[in-house]
Image: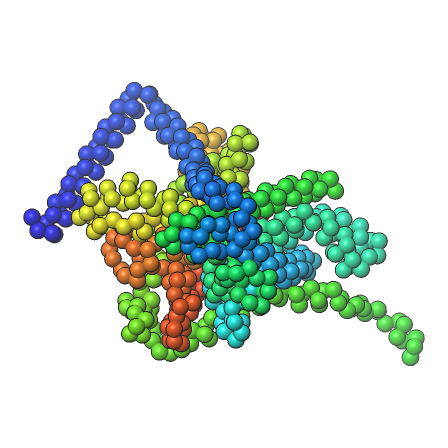
Length: 318
Length: 313
């Protein structure tokens, strides 16, 4: 048989199989209806649906456990050597390679990005609660929500065209890109946390004759601090795991460098570049760096959840 | 004269609120960053836009040596992987959302909710290395090869199965967008007024009939918004896809062969792009990606917002 005929024959066969299955299911449901009584099929549908929902919940946890399991088992051999945290990259085949340079790079770049994004974000969040009822406030909110959705690689291109093209690859440019990614997260979580603070606190402050700025910065903001910290931590975790915008800003560096005006390495860059090499020891380094990254982000996430729980308890007390 | 002044009704004195001025100026940072990003990327893409015109979007060729660049293979790869990921994640995501929005079993539900949200915390590049070294070999042996051997004449499964292909990239993407889908859908389902449920149950509907015929239709636009938001996430996802899709700028009518996406080609080739036209073409791809995700996100936001406004009303 020639090609098109074979396709036709196959499709016909497939249709036949589907038809038989449909028929069998119909027949089965009819017999069940007879066997189960008047509302039997409804009860059956209910049971099946409930089972399916519970299965969905179980299925959703499967990838998380698989990712964690394999990252831990494949990354542990690498990170159990102390050299892993002390040394820098070594040529292929020479043992004792480490990720110290990437660790330093991530901390320096995320640190600078936090210094840029967190103060601006917190002030913007406070502004949205205090004065953000008009059209300008809506614009800021919309801009934040849209900015969160812009792919990080495009932000990388933006910072490349804005800064790197005029100067060179540097840790500073990477920090700017990360700050742009962190800013909307900090703004919206700060806004949500500050809005949770009961209005009576503000009224009490204003009634005492405190100026507006003291009420918002010294009264309202401290009451919302756990929520603000949560937002900042989530933003830091997001920034630490970002890879795409670093490709054309920090670029990567094989040596230990504390100087953000030059190219720097970062943990996610190590995972990406080493994982794609054909050398087993580099792949092992990549798994080790991935494990460190996962531990860092999970730690920050758990910490932020605890902070949020405090916020909720605090809001209950006031 | 002084008397007349005193008699006039006191005009409210506007105290200059310097706190307001300063904070408002600071809060403009986010809109400014967004505007600058759109502007800078668009102007840097100008040389390519001028050189290729609108034909860039439908040209199939991508050859840096001959300086001929077209976006179609990347648009194809991006769209196909995103839709496939959505098709896989949507049923599971809504199932999880329905499960999480139910009453009772608080501990179990909280644990599963936290677990799903932690999926969103894992960095993209970790999904990439996991997809490349764990999921891809498994899928090749247990899914891709059997599919290509048994259903080779069915469209989508033609040709030999490769380890890195559209299918694996879509599966990884599906995992990554699951938290977006389920946590927003859960909030939407919770926002459905309780009276609707109660009325439905009082009318004799089963639990499932209430969910399927009352709750989900009531939250339709919000769930659609969550879907669109997840779509935006999938369209722009870079590292995990770059590491699993195989990176070949071809349009093959099968899910088992390598392909390429807009974000991956930028990640792979931008630092090595020689010549202004090449890098400008890559930035134009970035511009396309940005405009698409921007549109998708605004659409999703409007949908989700309309729901929360209804819920408040």
